[in-house]
Image 1 (cartoon, rainbow, N blue to C red):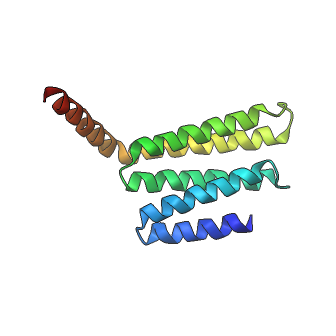
Image 2 (cartoon, rainbow, N blue to C red):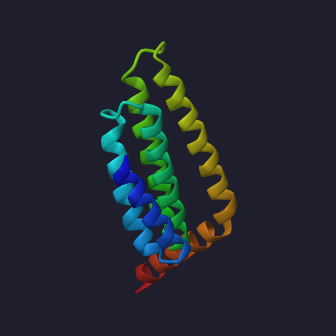
Image 3 (cartoon, one colour):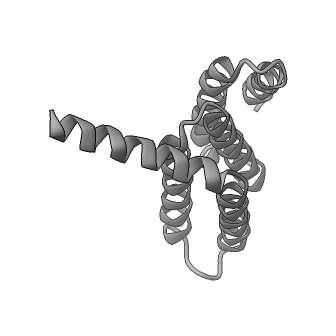
Length: 138
């Protein structure tokens, strides 16, 4: 987890410096590092938290770059990963509760994203539709 901590600190520094492209790359690396630890780390809850933090920060950086479709995909992929992990355990396993908490956080953050960037998402979508219509007219 030390490597993840190193990456997340670097990513947060890049984000704070408005280097969103750099932060995206680092958040992706941090998410990969956390993902590897989820099934191998003695503290699964900590590894899950690291994965969720990495992916949520990644989605925020993607939004700052107007990469809304990518951000939505990041949320969807994270939700799918968490559900698959949750399904690999019996319902009595305490890990299932930790994953359920993580899924609730992801859902809440996704709702916050759509509230915060709703206008931008609609604007980008309309621009893309206009480009497709214009291309179709040519």
